[in-house]
Length: 124
Image 1 (tube, rainbow, N blue to C red):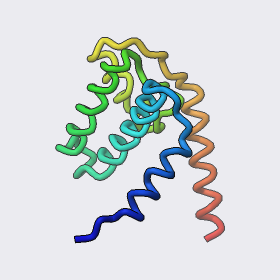
Image 2: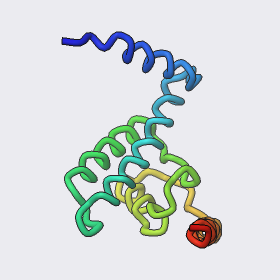
Image 3: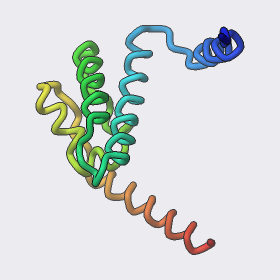
């Protein structure tokens, strides 16, 4: 059995780089990361459907959102979660107030992303 001391120490040391001084800061960062995990689970789900993985991550988001008593910021979300209304519907169902996403900003972000991808494809 390997004790993984080196790997564990590296993880502990890298956690110090985050600079969180309060539990709320750390929980807010983790909440944002969970939304990213949900986005990934949705991408991996068969035919883009909701999966057991999505359910598991959404439950963790709900627990942390309830504990924090506030929504994660929409401008930290993946575009697809906003475009599809998943972010908004989630908070509506939980009864947690949130700042409505600026769909004009999201449309500009989408256009910039698409233009960047087209440029990259054109170079290939």
